Image 1 (cartoon, rainbow over the protein chains, first blue to last red):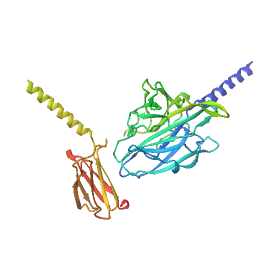
Image 2 (cartoon, helix red, strand yellow):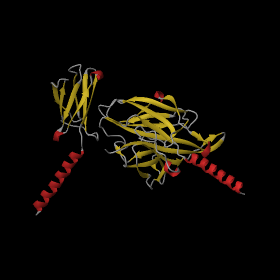
Image 3 (cartoon, rainbow over the protein chains, first blue to last red):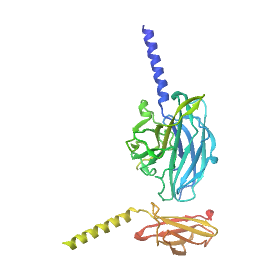
Length: 268
Length: 107
């Protein structure tokens, strides 16, 4: 009886752990080496494009994206051919995973919104495909113009807070669009990038709900979150696509995510 | 009484304008060289051009090489005067001032 009971408990725990692993949020990620380029800064940005669990640092394989580009001064520039393949892993992962990187030289003042549309990622644990349309905005040379312009992706977050020059503790507000229309009640997952440059110590969440914060958008698709630590913060607004994709000949659902990354620094 | 109201309203309008000016914060200047000509663009953070701003160009020793005024689009261009680092200063109204260091390596 005792043994049986213990076994049951152990199995329940294993089950829970298994569940919690799949529960952790996937995030399409674009992180540039700098988010505000001033006159004295190098004009060349290093940009990393990944598919990760930001808090835990776990990588997933990312195939070459469907599109990758930059929106600046109302014009889109295709940068897909500039991406080069890299490998990465978290310390507790026993294999490496594919990620991407590029270098981009800033030539003019203004806001530069980088965006990526990955190829659909099959996630057996969720019996669903995942497509995260991901954006990040950097500002150059004092011209603060363009950050609130939509790229025109299937789903995207339009920042209502200027997405750079943010202090730790600031409220980030954004609007979730699906096919250009506000996504009422969309669920937005929020994670801190533990490997943020300048993060003084790795954050160890005391329990699962701390890993991924969750806020819901209102009837206009508008959500807000106050960021409690310096570094990079990812916002992933999730919706179910109204289209399906086939996996082994069977039609499966597609989770479409509108992801936005912002950077905060401490006031001092 | 009517007069008082007008003065009050005018003052309010003036204050609003003044505040707006102060809110337009920093003036910025950007410059690049193309075909032996230096192109400058002067702007406020929201993209509004600095019209009629005074431009002064200095060499590395701080000597004034030339000066000019920005047009209604905030633009001013001039032939490259020297192949060395140039400091290009924009002086807008109300004490708004900034500069751009155009490096020799970018010429």
